[in-house]
Length: 332
Image 1 (cartoon, rainbow, N blue to C red):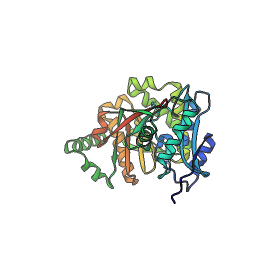
Image 2 (image 1 turned 90 degrees about the vertical axis):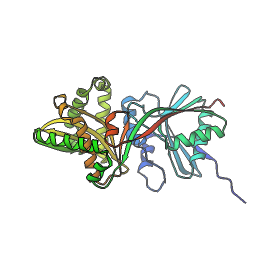
Image 3 (image 1 turned 45 degrees about the horizontal axis):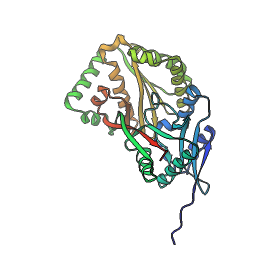
Image 4 (image 1 turned 180 degrees about the horizontal axis):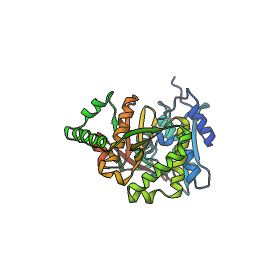
């Protein structure tokens, strides 16, 4: 006789419990997405939170945690905690063999709570949320709409710098080498990485200055509130050992800066900026080249250039990653 699996119970958890789940080994949860880590979402909530509590939904089967849906509710719509301007893509946190059952339990729970829509975005094409929720919604008779909303880029990193260069086309390989030679001729060049918590305040001021000065749209984006988020996330990620804040100095002047996070064998290129005085030396591009080289030297497996269709991402060897928004209508 085949035994029917026990019912999944959904419970609302606190940020403190969410963090405890992340720290506890042996739960078998898939913590693959940087932008749903408890430290990331708690920082977003501390800076941008709308006041009413988050709805961090945890699913349990016979007392065992099988999945977490980090959500917030606005009127009758549930979305991920966070916003797409600081969370490039997101996902659910689930065990490997309980996807469908967990998703079904979440949809049923939201419906019983009077939620009309579940809107998830952006999510990667290979995320468990995109494939799991759309299939489950269809089986439960709910309408699901999936639209591509953005594109990102990523690359698998080879074992050596020379191998990376030969991944590129001949023209681009030649251009990078030429730009590096010209940079070396411009003065005393140094690439340095900041990662200690006590180094963050002073160096983040420099980063934010380079970020805002590099483009008008970046200056408009970096409001006082957004600057508070950047500073706080840098501080907290440094305390966890996830921050890689790097500077390209020319004659001891920070010409360009790159803010990355190092998690799960992947380096995430989160944001960057440069001093317009050094624009002719392609310091914006080369600061990213140095970051890639340093990531290869440290044995990282992947370099995620994240959301955005900027030309440099293709030139540096990135391959496209489509990002989607999934909307499920729970009215049936």
